[in-house]
Image 1: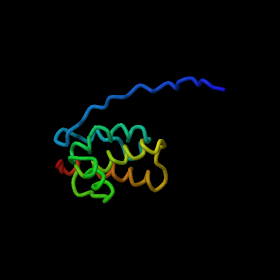
Image 2: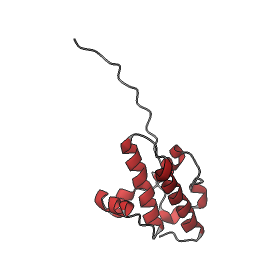
Image 3: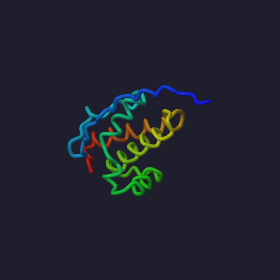
Image 4: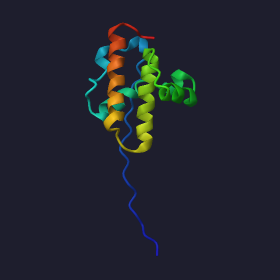
Length: 116
């Protein structure tokens, strides 16, 4: 016997505007205690795959927790967004704390004028 299931409705895709490092300001960066959806949307303002040259290089930067430059930090945040999207659930606990720290570090780099 066959069962027919209703096709699940898909949420509309949100198009996020890319913000290059040279154009980013503190007003673009959400507070580090923002909800996950706000942080995730901000993470997508930077394409870590393109910026680092490949998926593999992006993953290497993120998995090594490289935080030397604004580009490194934004690559890490971008990769975390992609990682948790792949997992299908929002981060929690130590994982969310790490992500919030990335956001705060991004704010620090921008405030210091370190936009590389």
